[in-house]
Image (cartoon, rainbow, N blue to C red; front, side):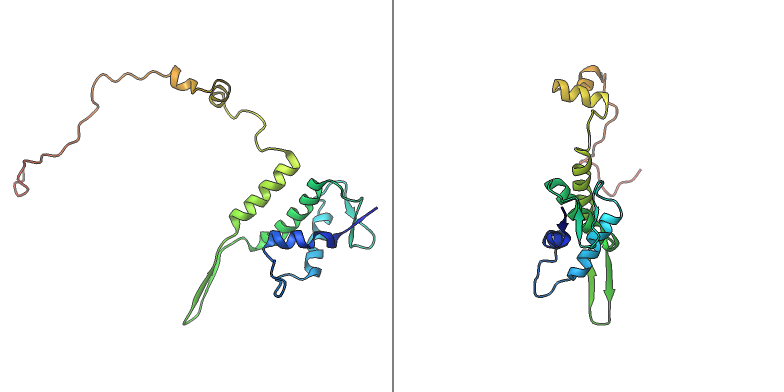
Amino acid sequence: MSVLLSDWYEVVRVLLGDTNESLQMRSDAQLLTGLRSALKLNKLVGYSLDTDLASVTPAITDPNVYALLALHSAVLFLGPESRAYSTRRRASARSFGSNGRYLDDLLSEIHALENGTYFTSWQSLASFFQGAQGISILAHLTEIQVSGPAGAVGYNLNADPEVRD
C-alpha cells in the first residue's frame, strides 16, 4: 500500500508560508520534487518512492513520520534561502530578512521527532543538584567573606570645578 505525495502539498505550503492561492510561490511540480528529494536523500528511514515516483511505500500511518516528511521538505526549500539580502536602485531600496531562526525552529522540530528531546541527562553536577534538590548547592557550598571595602568611588560635590591640582 502506498500514499500519494500530493497529500503533503498543503502542509508543505503552510510551512513555507505559500498560502495565497491566487499567487503561489511554488508549483505543485516543485513541491513534488522537494518531497521526492527528501525521500531519495533517505530522510525517512524505511520509506521509499514507489515505482510511479508520486507515492510513498509503505503507507505512512504514523503522524510523526508524516510530519517528518513535511518538515524535511520545507527545510530543503528554505535552506538555500536562509541568508538576508537587499537590493538598491536609484529611487528605492528593499531588504529581505533572514529566515534563519525559522529554519532553526524547523530543524529543532525534526530533531525532536527523530530523537526525542534535546537533553536526556543532566548537563553538569551543579544542574543535577539544582534539579534534584531544588536549591543551588554551589551557593551553599561556597562561602565568601569580605572583611572590608575593596575600594571606594565617590564624587566631591563641594570641590570647585575650576580648581585643578
